Image (cartoon, rainbow, N blue to C red; front, side, top):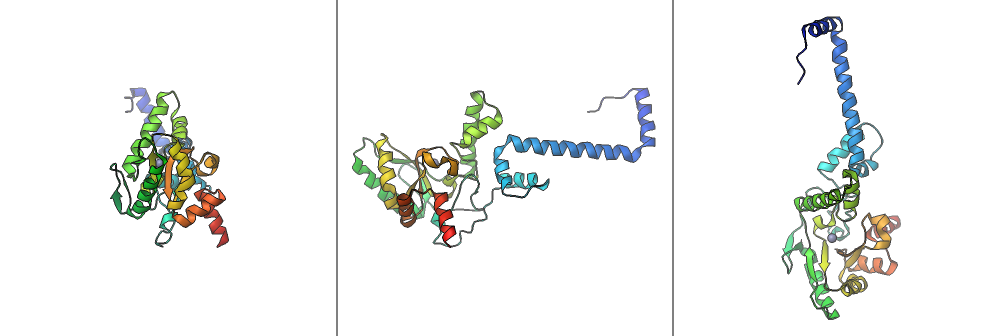
Length: 265
Ligand SMILES: [Zn+2]
C-alpha cells in the first residue's frame, strides 16, 4: 500500500509525471528487473540443489530459470526404453528420476513395495541372509517412495537440522547427505531397499554376499565423494547379478561402473 501523499507531495508528483512520464515507467521497470535478478541470485545460493542442476547448463541469466523449472519437475534425459538396461538406471544428486517413471510395484513382507522385477532376487537374498542366525529376520523397512513421501522425509530432515540452530542452507546441505532431494532418490524408482537387521553383522553379511543376488552396497563410506551420500549400510540397490559381481570384484560404485562401461563403448 502506498501512503496517501499530502498536497505538496501530490503536486510535485504531478509535475514530475508531466515532465518525465516515460522516465518513471522506465525506472519502475529497472527497479523490478534489479529486484528479480537479486532474488534469483539469492535464491540460487539458498537452495544448493538448484546450483547442482545449473552446473550442467551453460552460464547466463537464463540458467536460473532453467534450474528453477528443473527443480519443480525433475527430468532425466537417460533413455530407459531398452529392457536390458532398466537395472542400471542411474539416479543420484545430479541425475533425476525419469519423467513419468512408474514401475510396476509388488508388496514385500512388512508392507513396503518394490519394482516387481526385483522381488524374486530380493526374497532369495533375505532368505539366504537368515543363515546368519540373527535374532531378528532382516526386513525391508523402506522400499518404493512416491515424490510426496520423499518430499516429506526431506522436509522433516531439514526441519530437524533447523531445530538444532542451522540456517536453511546449512540444514539443507546436512539433510542431503542422508535424504536425497525429492526427484533424485533411488527409492523413487523402486529398485532400492533399506534393510533392517537386529545386529550389525547382517550388514557385513550383505556386503560380502548381496552381489550374488544382483544387489550392491550402494553408498560405501569411501565413495561418498562420488555418490554424494554418507555411508548407508542399510541401503541396497538392485543392478543385476552381472553388474553387481563386477562392481563387487573391482570395488566400484555404480557411478564408476557406468563411467567405465561408457568408456569401453
Ligand atoms: Zn535408502
